[in-house]
Image (cartoon, rainbow, N blue to C red):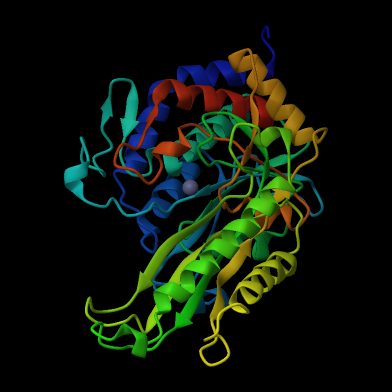
Length: 412
Ligand SMILES: [Zn+2]
């Protein structure tokens, strides 16, 4: 690259390798479990200000979005402008990172304390190291390197650090409502530095089936809710199989289906000697990119209704279907989009190769894509380690991600 500003930014990121790992470790030491993001927000705002960035804070309090939250307090988003605030109508590249982490679970399951931010064997360990403080750290260091190198890309980079992604996604909703849609967004979830330009969506649901209790010495006097709900599960499995067969995409060749279906919770009955008077199951069904939420909901309703029609107790004891929260819409950024090309070229420059693949997990990305932003997910760390007691991110991955992000930000 010679002595270009891009080469200077790349050299600055490589020189900051140790600082980057320390930054991620420091963030892991702030246990920002969803609902308690304030200290992590303050830490990042201070880091940005110390590097000469403009910083805005977006408090949750005072917004009507606060109504759906268990806790409001002084929870807030932090918006960082490494190259100053954009002019009106100027194209923006947003870098989205969520400040919250999922709970650590049982400390005894961890080889290192979950919030110690320990650096060991070339990796930063602990809750949030991969999901997604590693991505946040890489983006901060990358944007700072671009700033320090004096690069002024056509898209002005803006860092969106948001609260509440692991619970309701309220932070990104708050950010977008205030800032409007950027031209492009990189969401910094762990992808192992692979480029994700497409994701399927999902809708959570719950099905409740009533029965009638009876002593199990005479079960024929009751109506077994467990027996009634199992055919409904079978019907949804058949629907999910059909939907999977009807959607093929080359970036999902690595998984058995692009549209996962799963029942995550099944509960029936209260007592071993009583016929179950109630059964419930809750789970998720996948959605194609661009598929209207109403369509998948109608398909689920129809499948349940068709299966229930064979049940002699249905008229008297009808099943009930409930949607749990809003759907996470699927999304896809076209292959030739500037954002995808820039990420690709940057990854090739850093790694010698670029891997593109599709995601099946719900992220905040769909909120940006729904407003017309070109979107991609890209970040350091293995998504399979997220939410586990083995969560860590390698320092080599962090540096590669930061170099790729710096090259992308600088060229866009
Ligand atoms: Zn995440």
